[in-house]
Image (tube, rainbow, N blue to C red; front, side, top):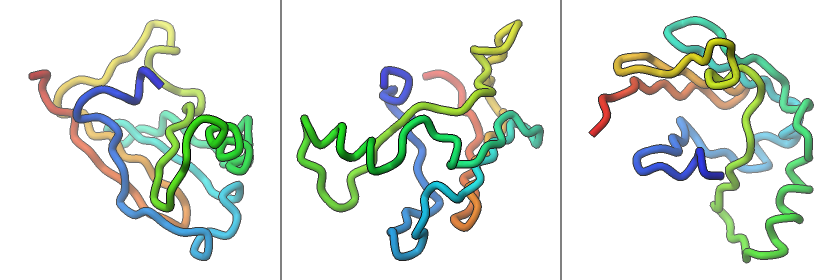
Length: 112
């Protein structure tokens, strides 16, 4: 969770969908590109835990409401896991696509 809690982080979108729009959250494809190069490409059927398991686990401590968002881990391909590590830099463009939903595109800004 620490990696998902930085101010200005946690990009969301371009859409939030409901279960009637995506009946099987484990039948989607997640692709991440940095400057047009694919760095992650995986099916949501490869998640360690199902969405239902995440909800059940977190519900032990929190009362979840419609619209709440649960941040989870990330598939392989993150820069810090590479040898040598690769880090995003200002003006890099990161695109995250999920089949059936859309693509979120962000340009990395300069540190404040």
